[in-house]
View 1 (cartoon, one colour):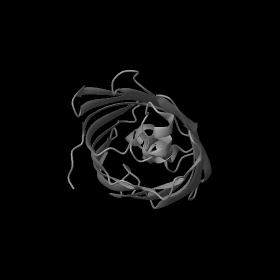
View 2: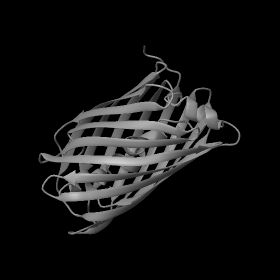
View 3: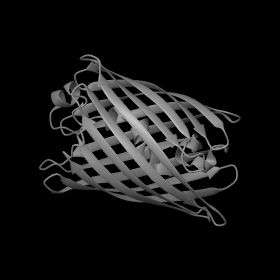
View 4: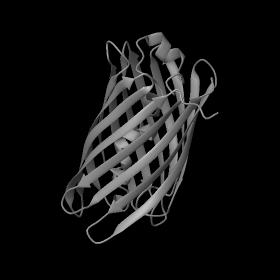
Length: 278
């Protein structure tokens, strides 16, 4: 599960969901879309272990988010190592995401990422989402993305989905379609559910994914045809004051034209809210 994509790209795959808090008020979650992009510092360490001799992947990420009112920004830097039985690769990635409210019904999310040209990250990414609030508790999302993978393999994609907010949480779904250079078309489905604790600031989120876009799940499979199924569960547990711990467990099953195997991911993060750089 490259970078636990069903969780962290999450960012990229469920932007409408990840840009919102599981607020206890329907109107608040729908009317203040960027409020959930809290000013915070997040440090995460993640390990994925692959079966059938497909090695391991370890990644460390530092992420900073700041809310400026109608505009919010997230900056991150990651270092990862992908180890195989006979070889290993290291790479770094730098990314930035800008959320902006244009009016009461439209906001956008723009994401840019650059990385080392190794089979660890996509070497470049550019994505944009348009999010429209059709109803007080419903947001529809349409987006597009360009990415280049190891071996100069370009991928263009479009996606569509929506998020339904209810008291104490949300449910979201997103469909994505990809045109992969020298490989053809593929697709993915991603559903997510988040519930906030009835008391306190803790929350729990579940992701369920499936499709044929193997390159989004494992960079080394960017030139392979096949399918996958994935599940991930995350718990955000407040500790004291502005500190919280994020714990995520996930598993992805890969069915390729060369081999079938699975990846099991565990990550832990420390979240410090309210820490301002500027």
